Image 1 (cartoon, rainbow, N blue to C red):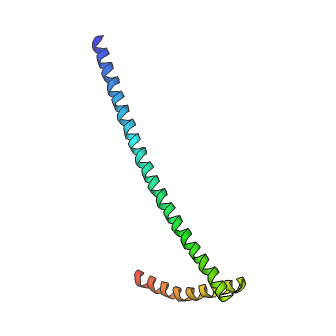
Image 2 (cartoon, helix red, strand yellow):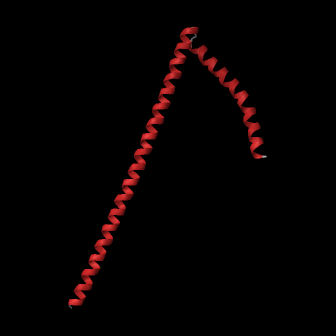
Image 3 (spheres, rainbow, N blue to C red):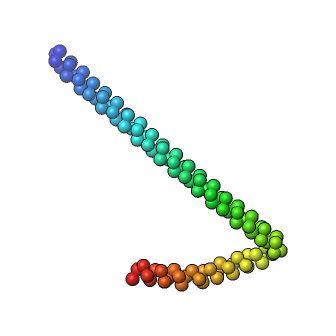
Length: 104
């Protein structure tokens, strides 16, 4: 009977040690995930701040340019559309030429 009690205590002790190891491993994993999430959040915030700064610069440039050249909003939109279509006309042949170069 005493031998069975000793064996039972050893099993319980081993199981308790295993639980402690698993709990510490879970805590390590949770900490690693938290650090990764924090770093990702910091990176996303920096990117968002950078993009917002660029948008503000473009907006300020647009306002300054419109005021300097006294352009109405509808004329501005036409100018941007024309510029965009010109850039697209330049970019499409380049892109198709590059795809030909890379894929053949």
